[in-house]
Every structure is written in structure tokens, then in C-alpha cells.
Length: 169
Image (cartoon, rainbow, N blue to C red; front, top):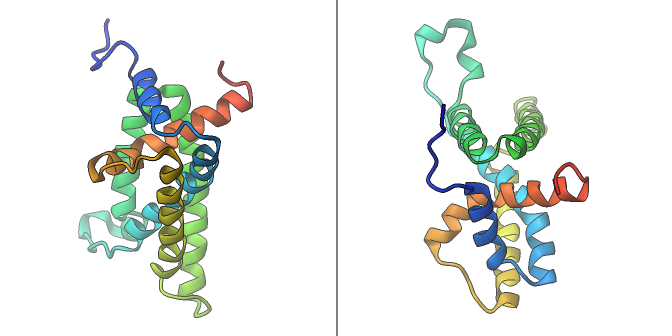
């Protein structure tokens, strides 16, 4: 039984393309730090979008939101590209989800700001740092490649982490 993919090694192609525009030590370091921050922020902002109450969900209404759908699509994409890296990303998503639920509880209990404020305060400086990192490469990516980087960046970071931990070669 063969599995259809767009190329024989999609993860190699993705990592190669991503690495080509992240080659200087400064840019790599900036992106190793900011890609998880941007990923967390985007997930938290999507989580904060109000989700309609659906009667067929019954008592599970509060457990489904727009981020649930985003997570489902993301995990499917990551698994199709690299099952091993998808497991690491799934653990990262669980950690991010726990932090987001903590932010949500902090706000609901009256001690914290609106749910979207903290992710925005993280996202904006992280994106500015990424632009600064790309300036060290002398090339700022286009908007379309930046959107693609939202999905491929976590694979690149997880690959680097797995290599560092000697989970992969």
C-alpha cells in the first residue's frame, strides 16, 4: 500500500527551504526563540475568538472552540509531513493549551487582562525580532512565505530540538 505525497521526502524539502532563509547564527537563534512564541500567540488568539454554543454538543460546549479546529488541521498536516516531528509538536500544543487555559482562568477569575492582550504583547515583539533576524540575512520574506512559515517554522524548530536531543540524526 503506497502513500501519496507531493514529493518523495516532503520534510526534507520543507526543512531545506526554511533553512535556506535562516542561515546566519543570529537569525537562527532569533527564530528558535520566536517561532514558539509566535505559534503560542497565534493559537491563543484563535482560542480567544468566541465560538457559538451548539446544542448538539450538550455539556461539551465549552470544550470545543476555533483553536480545536486549528489544532486538528495542524496535527493532520504535521503528521502527513513527518510523523515523528508531529509527536513533538503535539506535546508542544498540549503545553501551549495548558498555558492558554491558565490565561483564560486568570482572566475569568478577575485578575488578568482580556484573553487576547497577553498573546498580542508576545506576538508583536516576536514578529519584530523575526524581521530583524531576516535583515541579518539581507532578505525579508514575502507575505506568502511568512504565512507558510507559520506552519513550517514549528517543524524546523522541532527538527533542531530532536537533533540536539539525538532523537533523530
